[in-house]
Length: 279
Ligand SMILES: [Mn+2]
Image 1: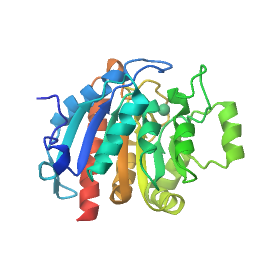
Image 2: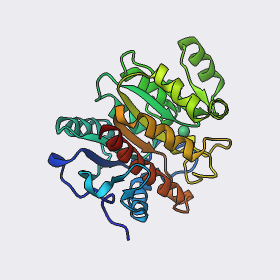
Image 3: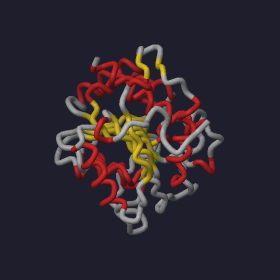
Image 4: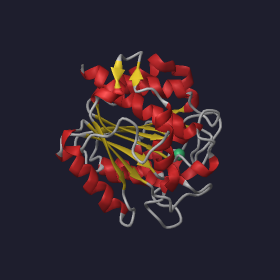
């Protein structure tokens, strides 16, 4: 099995409720490289799952979804923003497969009136790294800047440099560490998110937010992370009010396939949960 399209994504954009596309950017990775192969690996692994999601009673083969393929990444900002604009214009929900985390701000910038929920090990709150403001270590900072005052909430954090720590404190940036997420549990975390991020959402899943035991194939693994089921449950909880989704940093050269499979499954769970919530 496997194919060039994400499974159950054979509709065309005009008729789709969800539009998947790949943004295989891989230029600023700071440790393991290879996230550019992420979208192809996620698509391949998407064929391992049944289209039917029994606990939500949703058959994904009934949900009109398209896969627009990979963008060339010659001009990532322009390509991603134009693609997201086109998808939103068609009345569809963008689902982006990375690629490194730098791709997320370009998509977020096209959605109006959204708050952002991020799963990540890293705060990504640098203003630049190695002279590059679009380095993947600056993703949260760049998303915050395109949000025009709407909140962004990183969850799963356990890697922060001293200057990010101070800047976050000065800016009043709220974030949930992986340890705090464990203390809160699923219900506590759902309540916190509903209170701090009301209204329309965009979800950005950096796979390294999840523990390397579940997601070892990432560019910059960080121990003591989130449980994959917790991340699934949070995504399911907020899917009904989510208007854009991305999943980034899968690094196939470091993966036995399970990280890409988890990423594919989270995409399917997002779509199924959103349809379930809107039924
Ligand atoms: Mn990260």
